[in-house]
Image 1 (cartoon, rainbow, N blue to C red):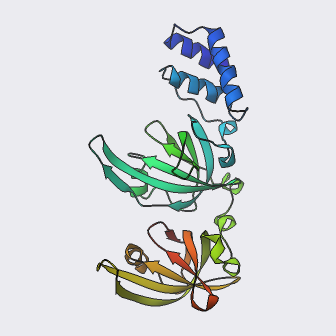
Image 2: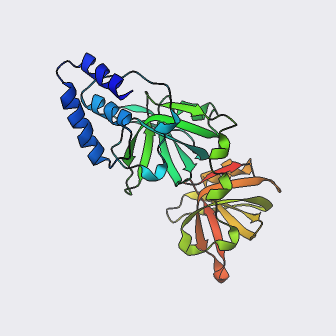
Image 3: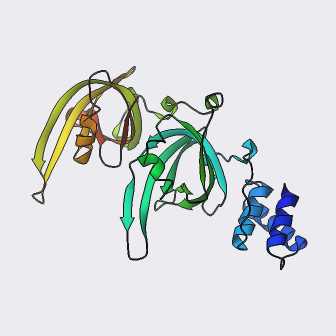
Length: 278
């Protein structure tokens, strides 16, 4: 496969010799510390040369675990289970406009934030990507977010494949990424929880400091280790009213633990939290 890619690059860019390609390949191997295959590195080199390489049949060996990713990689393949699927957002500026959606993908190394652009984001609108699915995300590229954490981006040339039921056992279950309620404390910051709704306490309105109106709702969530109060804010209230029924199983991704009165803790859900019924 490596020799085929070298030949294809040379056929589409006659200015570069095989020895020059091999020299560049060695440079990229050193830069990436052996984390990426020669095929992926050659595709990276081709991109830099402005050469369009034909797609190849997926090989499992091309998958990179989330813990080995860093910013600046191209033609990256990852696989795992969808832990959260956030709603599509639209954006518009003088330069461009479009859609984006974000996912949280879990593999054996942890969680990876994934950004879907335009037609890939439309898969979320169509309901084709759901929490709990095992997927392969192919031909993406990596960037650092504003906090310096690596994330994967999927654009026009990227592919999303659902993993067959026989292969799903390779990926961690949703519960592997959650915190037990008995272990909650304010120092944890953001957490992921799974549990059953025990009671819904209704919603109340309030007035913010800027005189705008807000709304808050509370419910009790229980797992096999204990029970906690969940506080839902503003736009999330309308979203969750449709889900909140006693005995409903919920998965909360990116909720925040805060100290409540009396030294107890409670969990807060806002626009940065993804909630799904299981």
